Length: 324
Image (tube, rainbow, N blue to C red; front, side, top):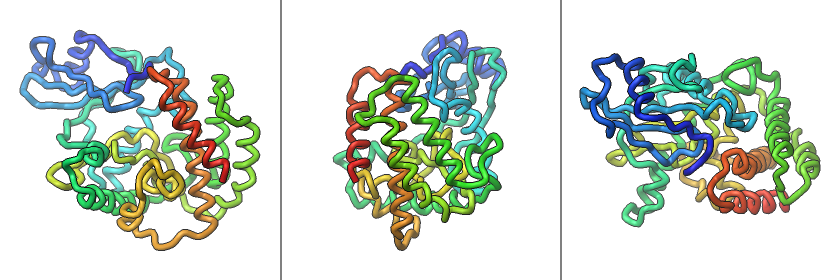
């Protein structure tokens, strides 16, 4: 996906990055050692072939001068913290970090490199006519099992992995909601409904969050596009910049409970082991869906996608949720 947040770099800079991360002996010859990976929406990512033939992935955060949404500030440092937590406290398959640089000496942004993990995204498999539905449903079930394991990690406070956080989930989510609405208002973006109407609707249901008393490690953005599959099994989970301490019910695998466009959540729910949904849980999930479609709507302004399709689609989802 094309986005102004993608911090593309010339070959000369990529060479210097390789030298810093892997040493001069691994700096490739020629100019065809770097290939941009185009599936992401936020960071730019390159597949790099080192002189030894080893293949790695480089991720670079957005340029310093590009304005991002409040929740995306420092996103790469959040991802690095998330990767460390996932490796040390869960059995989730995530890449190792070979080298991370937050000095901004070579590039005007944070960057890191990790081993390339070969595989197809689960979303690509679901879109393929050659892969049976039973196979992709089984992979979604496996993803539910993995996601449950991630959520078993318990934190001290709710909110960002880096920073002070909040004593309660209600405070945390209310702050997240106000941040995203504030981003939209500053951009002057039309949601199809007044911002204060959204605030009033959300405020009327925040009490449903009070039963969440334990901060759990949540990925939030673990949709099929961030799940790599090889030989019929999940081999890696990628893109962890939205991780936080919160309510597991906010996880992407549950999105289909309110948003049919995100696919049938049944296999994920079965793998996760969620046996029932109370009315309070349903209200919480509905609030999380509102937050998600608000973010999807508002990010179209900040990323300046090449057409209005994502904006119109997300705005329509918001209208449907609020109509409930």
